[in-house]
Figure 1 (spheres, one colour):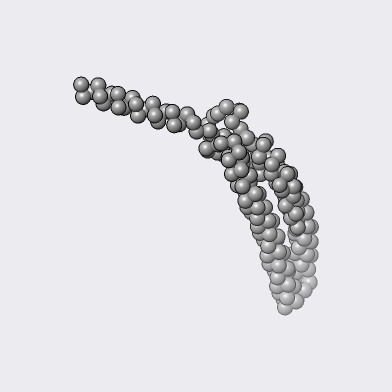
Figure 2 (cartoon, rainbow, N blue to C red):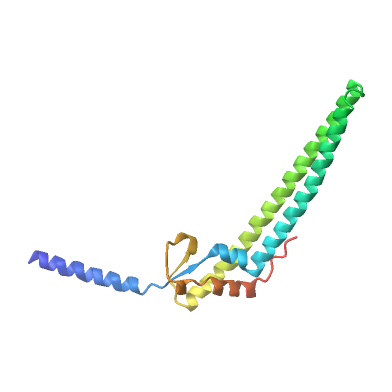
Length: 174
């Protein structure tokens, strides 16, 4: 008799738990896709790629000029006096150090802009997700990269992109 009562209690609890879980609505968002393909995200990426390639080209030209200057100095090593040669090598080292610091500062600036734009996008996406959850009675939102599988109709990525494009058409990076 004890086992029969325990069996019914456990079965009853399982039914209640199953029923409460069945009412949870879960959706999926591909956050990397939203960040990369929204108007603001794509614009920010294009701007950052363009500034990176422009900087790379500028720094490659500077590097070529420094190497040429170094080669010229090495060719004149025997012609110049030791004092004059050491002055010119010190000046060249200073130019190289300035070049490296400028290049590092430029890359850091681009990285900071990237992080700032990502942060801005995530801050704008959060209230959009909250409003979507309230409107559609959604209990949980998962990032698609964290899931192993799911039905395609649970993916709300495109809806979120459309709402984000209306709310934030551009990030205005400079």
